[in-house]
Image (cartoon, rainbow, N blue to C red):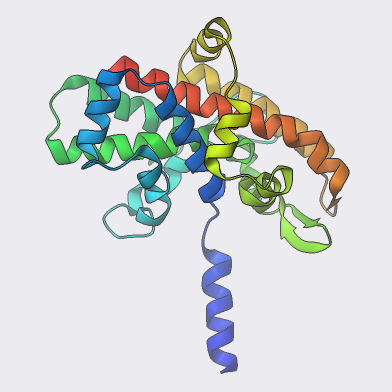
Length: 256
């Protein structure tokens, strides 16, 4: 029994953390759905076999652990060196990162040369990766693996900075369903939405890098994250989930 427990502990501590957790990705996907034109929404639903974008929003987190999609493990993030303040000069992952993956998938979907199954997989990946790109610790430092190596406490529980920003702080900010998240934060006018959707993934990631830098400054190793911290960063979580959804919608409209 002790051997089994030790083995399970090893397995679960070596599994990399992905962004936002199910609630965050569901929220990004649902916000995006609300901003699609009828034509684009119909095409995406057709590709997904009648299912919603929310239904497939977390698919890639699981798929990345399979042999077929193991090559996508580095696509969920774009960690930069701790002495850098921008994504641009950072040495890129040889197997791709979240920005190069999104750009490649968008180009492939635009080409019209994919089979129906390839197009479906591409859209499913895009739905997830745009969410990942807006999670601050997915533009964290290379030297601590995006916050995985920065040990902190969350209301007294031992964890790491990456895990806190994946799920803990989202649930700590608001105990909402993904539909309630959308209803509460998706309230901008057309001009404000257009401003957020302007640009490209290469520019959008720089905002995430900047947020990550601020989080590192305010969350040194050993920090016991509590109510004041959650209150401080709740607006950032709301902003990033909203931005992710709006920009995902913009990319899908650009493609279709």
